[in-house]
Image 1 (cartoon, rainbow, N blue to C red):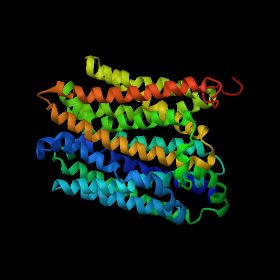
Image 2: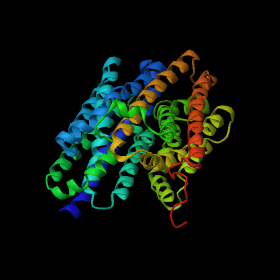
Image 3: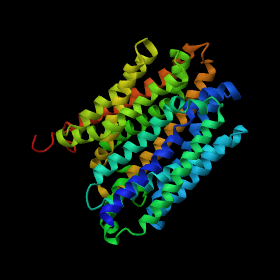
Image 4: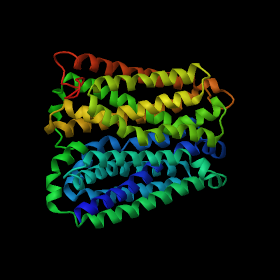
Length: 424
């Protein structure tokens, strides 16, 4: 059952994560409808994704405890149920406070869901093939994001009904994810105990949840702080822009239709479906991980400079951001594990997740506030300039952090992060 069953488990886990990543990215495609049909401000739209990040601040540290106590499959089911309820409340969405509360409930489930599903992959593939399984897992998450971005095209009839039907579709997809989580829990009853025991170390490494110790925060190596700076700043820029404001910006400032704006935005995620495993393989083959991270980070400020200062084809900026989003996630997590001893991976990954959630929440709110202050919109496309400048500066900060990492790792105090792979 273990050999055959683990691929069924991976398929079910992939359905769960794809449906919920669709829900995560479901706000951007309906943002213009919410603005036109319900009169939402940019700040209100930003809040819908900012509030998602709020519960992740504490849950990044405690979610692993729940997984350890009740099991990854059971935790996945509970978290998927929270996501479904949150998506339903968001689809009801009137008054605005109910929609915000729905996104909050969704956020409560999403972070724990992601971590518990990763733990499930590590448990079932602890005997071998975990790297491939996790690459496929991340790829399916990108499928969900890609499908959400292009939904105005393949679900045009649904969008024609106004702002609510697309969110009802989102709720239905999270319902399918919930059913997949139920089946995952049922199959998990047949997982051999030995497989789970053998994977305990893999679970800790994959989910980053050991016992949290406040004293550990002061003793990390300098290289860790550099790579954490990139990790936090990259997520704080990428997700607020691509998952909240990009489609609106493409419509208002670049003159695209909703369907075309969604398509352009979607290709960042579409490329990552295939490219992320490839760059992970490249890093394993050639080493030079600090160099790869530096190149990937450099593409982000270039992207925002092109968007704000030129009239170049949007496919250029999309290609650059897609490459960045493929390189950095593929390399940064195994690189972080290299910089931290195994007993403290929980503390390290928990700290990163906490700061990522803070950053994503803050920049969502800041971007919405800036757009409101400058009256950014179809009649004032230049009003998006301050938002683009903010994203440029934060992404430039990420580049500076990883450039410092490259320099340190190339010197005598490095950890081999920029070394050539053995045999090369």
